[in-house]
Length: 416
Image (cartoon, rainbow, N blue to C red; front, side, top):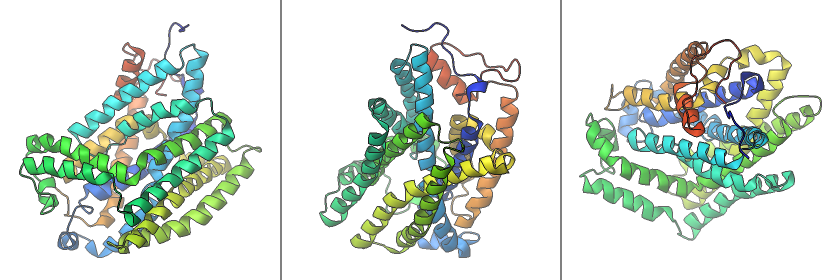
């Protein structure tokens, strides 16, 4: 029976450490995405060489591929799983449970579709919503089985990569082909000059091409077998959320220490090898398979090492420094979407068209400037309002009524 007066959770029920970790993950996602927005991923070698500071491109690419790419999205996936455990438990205590959570995921899927079709093909929200529904199937699975499933799901893409490179079986190819036919129907040839199309000021024409871009995204997710990777991190997060392992206590500290040692000790050197292969493998199928296999092995281990190290530092006296981005983490949906909007206005033809003007090393100062502003604005906003704008809409649609927005007093209800 549904409990009357269902509403988001109160501020006193939140875990500040998760907001802070989510904030740092958001900064890492911004950096990884900016490597695309700044034009580096689509530029030809002459275009890359013409950018300001291009002499630092190689070292910047190595560092980003080594320490950033994949790791912070994996942290987000981990936090999603933790949040799932916490939220579903509270919903069930209120007598709501799965139906309310499915509605929450449906609204998130709509956000993702709007992000995909109106702004950028790199959206992750729609995939999170779909895999969140799959995650519901695991809510009664035991802890040991969760870990086994998580490991299996991260190993599946290795076999998938072997089929692509050694058996010439690539189910992403037909999807890529359909996308290219869609572009061709509009007179767009991305193989000739993708940067020129990216810098086009004709937003209406770009908007018309977004369905084809969505097909490119689906093809990319299929090639990477990203759904299993995301679900694998969801399951680890669910396991952590059940046990509240994100808090470094006398009981959890030994496990966190082991996770740091294994995660960083194995993840850092192997991820460095993977980054080198990413930059040098070219069309060599054996090397590309090795690079993709190392990605599957190192990304979750390094992400878990980051998370465990963060928890240990938090309890060891660094909380004041680490908590700096917590306001942005509380408004993660708003900030994730606004990052796309800001980068679109900075780097594409819809705005200042700065793509390929700067070398890849400028990702760091641009990320610091944008994210610093987001943290400041988020702090200002949350001192006055319960929710970020996107979070307010998400929760209002989830609960079927407009949520009270203005903050009446400190400690009132905030975004979950």
